[in-house]
Length: 256
Image 1 (cartoon, rainbow, N blue to C red):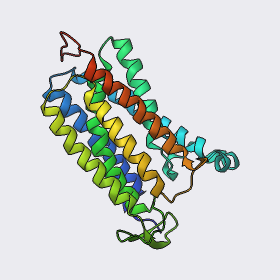
Image 2: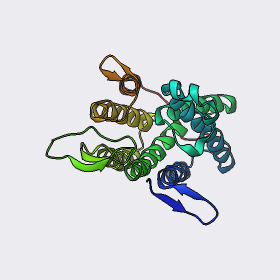
Image 3: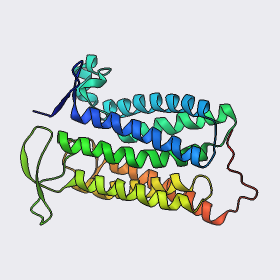
């Protein structure tokens, strides 16, 4: 039995509640970053946040459904039932960034300032979201005899000594959030925060993918998520190399 949160007017799984809390806190952190840096306008941020959030939510669901096509082919009525769970962070990241790029292009503003803000929001949001996964037994680790193994449940409530994947992810994203905050105080060029987030998070998740025990699609010996993560990490590395080798004269922080 997965833990639920009774809000009197609705009963919600703790996992769902924490994922939603992570999204709200992430948006707030992104907003505060932009306000401190005096980038953009409040109205435009609200419009952008709504567009990106909607796109990310749809992308997260679409990615999950695509990876579980056989299940949803037999249950098409569940595809749009978001309350049943089934959201994939990688799908949210892809769809959210595409929406951000389109919005920035239409408004003729820099996508990278907002991407940096999003990186801070994503790290703290994912830390909270992984807390929900731990409570729910989602995205669990492999059964392990390692000295660091902990008695943890899988998605079906079966408790066994497992690699502590969810705690490791929580530590990863809390540490990454603190690191990015420190990096932000150095006022790096626009885009550096996002690229650093994408490289570190993707590389770490690709490595941790070998310790995941939940079912997914495999390509050879790799989870499909690991292939996506490796692609993200490679793109981020290329971006950071360009960042370090190409000077951008006269850059301004004002993104109207």
